[in-house]
Length: 110
Image (cartoon, rainbow, N blue to C red; front, top):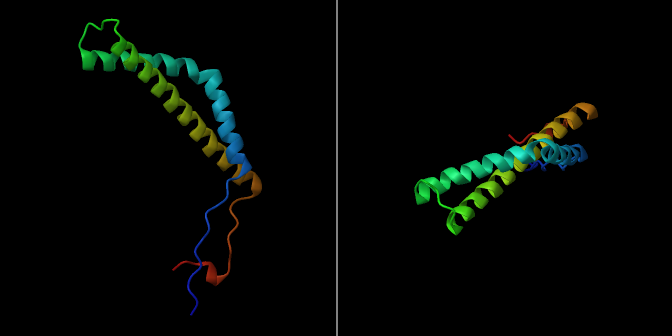
């Protein structure tokens, strides 16, 4: 009795990478300004919660607002890139005719 074959993970398809790139381009065109604005607003709320309100213009407040802006841009960019990669993978799978399956009985794990 031979041990079962361990399935290899799928390789990155070019469509997935193209989708991620298009997602980042779409983020630069549409999502960058709202990400900066909402990240700055979240930074102001964070600074008010940590340092008290009204928020004075100190170095700590500016640092917390900057952290909020950076996090807002990074998270929104990751969201756009992930959604673009998922859409690219779906389109690549549909265009290539679906997922090829091995019909041999030895290809099953269990």
